[in-house]
Image (cartoon, rainbow, N blue to C red; front, side, top):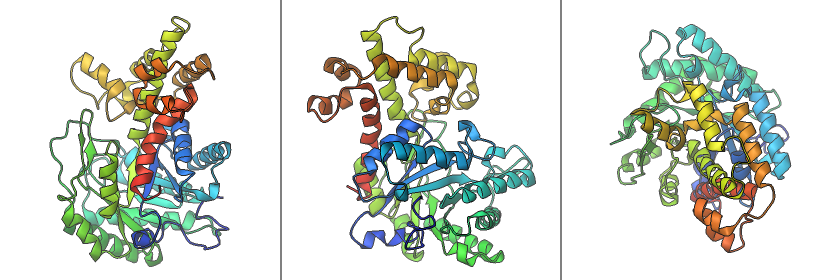
Length: 435
């Protein structure tokens, strides 16, 4: 049973009062783990298990939808997938919250608006019916023949339509979902160019987002659903591109943070917090950005660990595989360039470097590929459960070396891969007051 699902003694969504968390003992925010990689999800569960935090795991409209997304999973499939990992890890399912991110027409924005919205409605119904209880309504992008970004009023009208669909599709005995409204630029997954500066969301723009959504919900008789809007997505001045990261500046966000006093019961959801320091993440939570979204950052550190293990395997067992993991991933990405080609720029050598090492981490789209999955399995089979030499761990997985030397971390392949993601997740858990 998922957190906030039927059978919960409080019969209330556990995120409903997140705006009040800062006024009482315990966690004051929550990380949003946005990934479909099983190792990343397992590591997040292991990092969260010893804390009082629930675990919020989100899928995006491109990862998971009624057509399978790039993972091949529907919302119901994703729920079973997460619950199977929780069962294996021993993570209580009553502490799990499932969320849907950027639920709207984005996967079908090349279609006319009516067709794209019809598909978006089918998608959000599937999310709600599968028991996802945190739903981000994002209809800001234009469809075929429309402007790239829609105005506030039309965005809100389309979001209200999707909220109505979710309300109709959610299980009758289930806990009502909470909603996130608003969006940010650039698109999910990080900017495509190097970032030299960011324009923070203006406080008045945040207030307008809330006002126009309230009106649009009321026009459909969805006042009760709007009462379950817990936050809005804004740009707090954090972002990452292919080559650089823009860190959080609390002084610059002072006005935006103060605007929350005009929006009682709401918090901000900060997207693109990947690669922020623990100190920056803590400052974000303290300033009211209580939902910290992290996605590519998780698979970036996992890829670092896998490539480190790949190098260790070549040192210990040279020539025993037809191809290294990195060589396999290069083959897979070149054979199917759709998920990276238009995002990476420069010479052939520069694009090759970005394929593997970009902060945008578009390699994450390729881990479900059967050839890639087989290469990872082959790597773990080759290294097995043997203790790996400390000197090689220091050489290729240097960040994990101190814990191995101190005896806090087993020098084994699977433990090392999980530990890389756990270390990152712990930054978020700590920032949210969970440890």
